[in-house]
Structure formats: structure tokens, C-alpha cells
Amino acid sequence: MPRYAYVNGAYLPHKNAAVHIEDRGFQLADGVYEVIACIHGHLADERGHMDRLERSLAELDMPMPMDRQTMAIIMRELLRRNRTQNANVYIQVTRGAAKRDFPYPSKDLQQSVVMTTWSFNYDNQPKMEKGVKAVTVPDIRWKRRDIKTTALIAQVMAKQKAVEQDAYEAWMVDDDGFVTEGASSNAWIVTKDGTLVTRKATTDILRGVTRTALDAIRQELQIKMEERSFTPQEAYEAEEAFNSSAVALVTPIVEIDGHKIGNGKPGKVTLRLYEEYRAYVDGLRGEQIGWKA
Ligand code: PDD
Image 1 (spheres, rainbow, N blue to C red):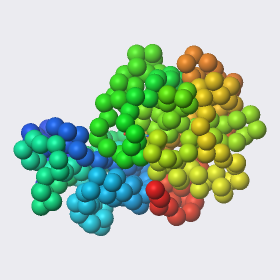
Image 2: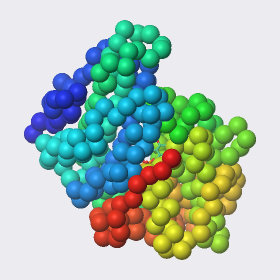
Image 3: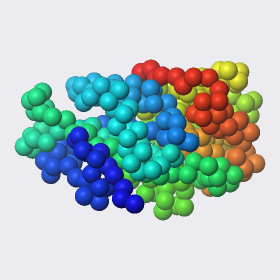
């Protein structure tokens, strides 16, 4: 069965799908992206991801390349053509193709829009039973981490360090010694008294759409949350740790830098949040919420 990708108005066989060599996304990482989970046919937090896409674009003086309704139709059509109901949907928008030059080209330049889907089985993930390992690495990124740009080389290097140490995620640590976030996820710990702790969403981190949903869910469950910085040492001594993202959803972390977290098994609060988040995406509890910068 051929696989399709959406590229600038056309559904093309994935293996031949391409953008122009002068695309500013390719040459300058002058673009933004989103990853949305499609689970059992439901696009998780679609509105939140669209809100953030629009905001990332606006921060780089780009408009939405099409209205949300059109984007919603294309995503669903691509999933349909790829015959999948369980997938990561990837959306990338760049400023378009123009002669290589640093300043923004004319506003009339047509933006590039690419969408792909990658089938992904969100059920029966062994990482939910066993948990995963994380390692810490220095956060060497730029200062506008709130924009979901395709300039990901620092995260690529961080993830590589994790893989080399047999870990699933790299937690990045700022110059003051505090954890910012995972290379492709938000970082959370649960203290001994059951309080959730995650970094405040400033320009230092990407405000995760999953993070926003988890905040709403934990309020309903009356779980306390502190938005503050924490050190790797505090994480080593925490009761639980986990990552959140459109791909990780809520992934338990059972070891950080070789330190066992809690009893070395996925924590109770983590698993509860995971179950509740899955139910929320399946439409079994409440309406999906938006995302706010
Ligand atoms: N990454 N922080 C960073 C640096 C991220 O790259 C991501 C997501 C998140 C979590 O955001 P959300 O909950 O909205 O997925 C936080 C995606 C999944 C990726 O790059 O593949």
C-alpha cells in the first residue's frame, strides 16, 4: 500500500515527496512544526496544537498558511489515505523557497506546508510497564524555546547522548543547574508528598500542549502542582518522574543518571495521569481544551 505525504497542495507518494532545495526550512531552519497524536481516530488536543502553531508562526512574523478548517481536513484526509487511526501527525510550515538570504523575503512568498503521518501503536507500550531511563545534558539551545521551531540540532545532539547511554530521553540542564525540559518533552517530578513539579512555562521551555491538558486534569483530580525549577539532585530524590509530549504522552521515568527514582517502577501518580489522559483523548472524560501562551 503506498504511503502518502501532503506537500504544498498535493498528496504525493511519500517516497517521492520533496520540497525545493532553496526552501528556507531546509537551508535556514526558518520554519515551525507541530506533532499531534492520533489515537483510536481522535486527534489529541488538536485545538491546542493549532493554537500553538499559530502562535509560533506569529512570533516569526508568519501567518497561518491556511485556515484551521482546511488544515483539519488535510490531516484527516492524509490519515485516511494512509489507512491509519493511530499515528503521529507531523505538520511543518516554512517561510517558503527563495534565493538564500538571511532577512525575511517578500511577504508574497508562498509558504511551504508539509504533512506526514507515522503509524504508532499507542496501546501496549512496554515503556508504560517498565518505565524508561533519562540522562541529564547541558541545555545549549537559544533563548526562544517557547517557539516550536525546526531548528532542533541541540535536541538532536542531546537525544544522541541519551541513546549512547541506553536512555530514552535527555533532560536538559540550564547554566544555573536547573532542569529545563526533555529534548522532545516536558520534564516532571512528583515529590514525596505527591505534589507535581514542572518548570514554569516562560521562554526557557516549550509550553507543551500535553502539559496544559495534564494541568487541567490534575486540577480535577485535586493533585497539587508547583510550576518551578528543580535540580537533577531533586529529581534523583523524587518519588516519581515522567515526561509528557504528544508522542511520549505520559512516560514514566524510573532512572535518571543512574539513580533509581522512587522504587524503580512507574509511579502511582504518573500512571493515574496517563490513564486519565488516555480517557480524555478517547473522549471519555470532558471536552478537549485549548492552549494558551
Ligand atoms: N516534541 N518540549 C520540547 C522541547 C518538545 O520538543 C516537545 C514536543 C514538548 C512537549 O510538547 P507537546 O506536549 O505539545 O508535544 C516539550 C515533539 C513531540 C517532537 O518534537 O517530536
